[in-house]
Amino acid sequence: MKYIIIFCLFFAISLPLQAQLSDDFSDGDFTNNPVWSGDVAEFQISGANELQSNGPVATATLSLSTPNSLIDNTTWEFWLKLDFSPSGSNAVKIYLVSNQADLEADLNGYYIGIGESGSADGIDLYRQNGNSSTKIIEGSTAILSASSNNQARIKVTRDGAGNWTLEADATGGNTYAQEGTVLDNTFTSTNFFGVSCSHTSTRNTLFF
Image (cartoon, rainbow, N blue to C red; front, side, top):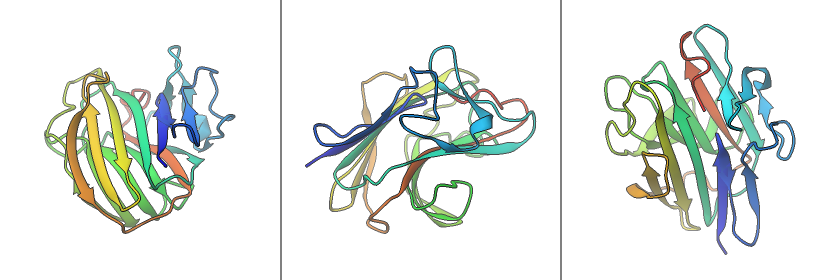
């Protein structure tokens, strides 16, 4: 049995034939079907039906999560746009797995991280244990490095044995290239899926 999660930022976790969590925000809402919780006042739906950050004009971190229990034989797929060059100060984490709804608290899980110091802005997979994160797949360096309109479609799969595969299309399309694989069974259950955006005062509305 295979499960898929499709998350469109526009997000979707999609699980063919059997179960799925999916949201393309075409209803202009992220408080129902499914219900997203967290910093709800600091996000909005764009005119193109994309989830968009709407944080304060200050350095801040904002996050949203939604319940999800899918992890074995599961595919997570999502599109995102960062209208700036990612950095250590302006970065996004897509939590595929989390045992906590609050993605800014200590938690156990796995996330896709984009945004590092210097020019190494790859699409990477991390394991988080409490407040400590370990990179377990390092994607192509500087796959997202333009000053604006960085788009990517990302697909992550995990089988029942804990084998993870990370793929991405840095144009935002559907032509995936493999970024890496890893066997990691540190955490084998999940309660939530979500997104966390860290921004400076000038990037507060530029995460899609």
